[in-house]
Image (cartoon, rainbow, N blue to C red; front, side, top):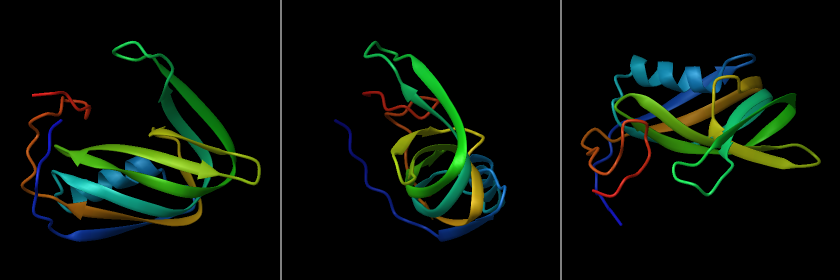
Length: 138
């Protein structure tokens, strides 16, 4: 196990409108506000299409499966990290029949609008994290 304390910085709200791509928007917001490291606390809103990946094996490293689809979905949860400017986020969304979730990829597009909230953590250390945002024991 690895733990770390950090001081929090600015809280940034990111409004996205119809057709905006969530991953691209979060990445652009981090760049615009100079967020090198931070926490994605959440997001509310709806999407018209999704593109995610999920693990498909228990092997290490696990094999990933990519899923895409369309339809009206409510965002039930979105959280993650910004490490060295790179967004690593997971999304859960649902409709009247099911809920689905996984690692956020480009292609999750906003239906009506959404708001994400990011917390800057300027003094976080990357010890324990590899270059693509996966935790590794130091």
